[in-house]
Amino acid sequence: MKKDNYLRLILILTLPFGLFNISRAEAISLDRAVAYALENSPVLQGTVADIRAGNETVKTAESGKLPVIDLDYGLIYSDNPLVSLGSILNNRKVVANNFVPAALNDPGFSGNYFASLSLKLPLYTGGRLSADIKQARAKHALALAQHERSKSTVIYQVKRAYLLAQAAQQAIRIARSSTDTAGMHVKTTEQLLAENRTVTSDKLTATVYYTSIKAVISQAQAQYAHALNSLKQVIGKDLSTDISIEPWKRVISPHKLPAITVAESTALKNRSDLRSAEESIKAARARTDIAQSATKPQLGLELRSRLYADNPMVDELSWGVLAVAKINLFSGGANKSRVSAAREETNRLQAEKRNKELQIRKQVRDAFASIEEGRIRLKLASTNLTNARTAVSLVNQRYGEGRTILIDLLQSEQALLKSRSESLNSRLLVEASILELEFAMDDYEVLEK
Image (tube, rainbow, N blue to C red):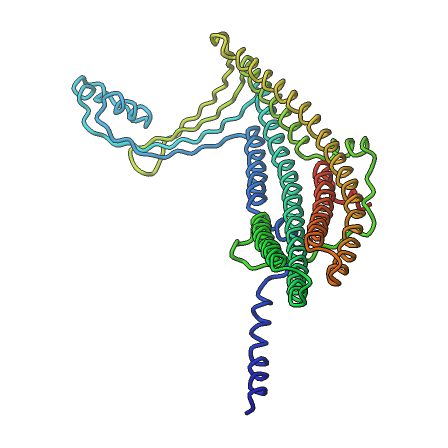
């Protein structure tokens, strides 16, 4: 077999393995990343557990209005005189000999079985049961609102991490392109040096510049790796998983922003964390009602049936009905203090809600300001990038002809690299600020409508 054919065969045999290694990286689109995060995020799994727990708490509170039925069955074995006499009386087996002093003072050990069936029903609790139910429902609604905000947070984090990874990927492309161009300048300088149209120091300068630009690639690759790890973390994937992302596509038409007042109104209407604050206030008010119920009458009814026997088969039965009315007359001021503390907690939560509204409006306005800043910078960077590319083309042509010095070429290349970086950063600022606005408004479709 000829050597050329052997090498061709080796290439063909190794190609499938090379493709297999490349395909090991799981390609994840933005939509798929968001869907995966919503299904697998540990944060959301925790908030879902809170919702389920809140639902059970509501059931527990509502069950307070229902009767409670208890059944007890047991054995008493004692030589206590009072217990022994009580067992005889409860079994209705009293005889004259039971009252002999010797039998009363030293009855010896005796065993007795007992059973008790009771039904307890609250008639009036001063509003405590209703307040317990309100508090439980408010906490359940709070858990639901927190879950919704957590979903919005996860979506925002995934989109932001994906965007940063795309920007880092684009930075690698810019660094590689600049490195390739710097390598061409080294070759051009070597050619000019061979033709005695430049000096050795220019060759060294071109080489140093090439090396410095080449180092930027490793920095960009490290940033890309960090960005991928952040993306895997927020979507709930194992950090050892190899993934790849879609390239960053340039937005053809700019996003049309709503009026800032409309954005603020939408944010105040949509924000789940603001609803969480409202539910917290409702729960605090319910705690105030619970504290106030301690100073009101408490009425309850209890039906009880007791059975006693001196053998395992219970054969004696007694019935009783107990109606209880209770009211606290004095507690040393504790009840009043509890009511005052609950009211102050409500006041605190109301103040926090007002502060939350101001924070939400500020987040909206900050996002608008960042978008405007990014658009201005991007417009300037686009113009500057066009001029920088034209300048590099002209200087490079003159340098190849030996009609200019190397330092002019490298300065123009540095200006181009800076312009490309500024264009990338400006674009990133615009896109990231749009995500901030969507997150502040709790509406990820507002800029697509």
